[in-house]
Image (cartoon, rainbow, N blue to C red):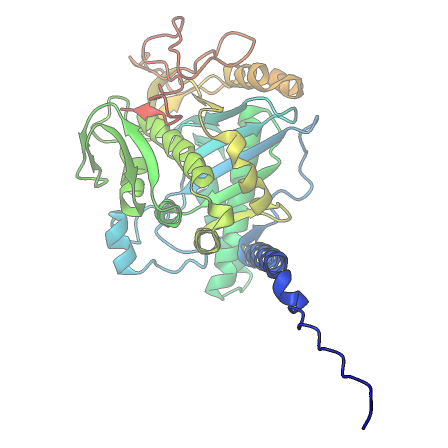
Length: 424
């Protein structure tokens, strides 16, 4: 029998993986977070590619002069059209929500025209509303309301193509709209005397879809309003408007002291509210909200070819919270032309105002000859003026009234302290 004794067995060691479980759990969580970030980034990239590939694109600015010093001028055009991008009538259910009447109404007038100037040095942006009835030179057509440039050029191009044998309705619509955009941009560029680097065109349903995609747009009213024509029915104070309410808000002109000129303030207030909501709602970190915004843009927006729209929208934080000075361009008096009401304007005054407000790049254009005029009409009380129109230097604070402005001058609307303009 062997004299060797069996060595006592050592106690079993605890598995190493158990001793390091917290560290491994942390690594797992880190990997999971990285994976989620990658998925989110991929989703954002997909959304961007989807938007870039699907949004309406136009060549209307090909070869156009560009701004200098890194500045950017953007023309926002809102069409009073009850039709989609292919010229098809909007569904009756949509028209009912829009409270905008039949799809046969509206035509292709550019009822909203706003030039947004974004300085290259990061200083305060400025937005200039052009009243839709301003009586100006339309290229090749003489003088007429500025809003008509789009529709007149569209109809002329469709007539020209039809005479050449083109019968496809969608082809006529696309070509007609492209001619309309080109003419409208040229008209505004000549009127203001500055380059236009980008543009965005929005149809009537666009206000509705944008507000819904953002989950409502905040606005502020100085007093309650009720208007059967637009459907506007709102209490005084700050409130959030859904899509249907937003469209009524920006369309109302009946019951407002200055009519169309007060409506431009509504449009400015809507844009300010939308910009603030865009930044406060976490749109770019919420895939569902981002896709709703993308879908809204695909339905209703047309931009110039090559503009990185999503990148610009992400910069909207610099345009919210009261960081944009809004001005409605001045009107000298009201008049009549061929039975229509018009705004008589002074072209030279407009060009000087723009040159003074957005820098030296417009100075050369401000010497362009001619000023709009109309058959003799007396000055209209309460004609619109722009805050700071006659002076040089920085734009006035939108929260402060301009003590030198004439009666009825259209300065930037007062704010309620939360960055949202309060309007009538």
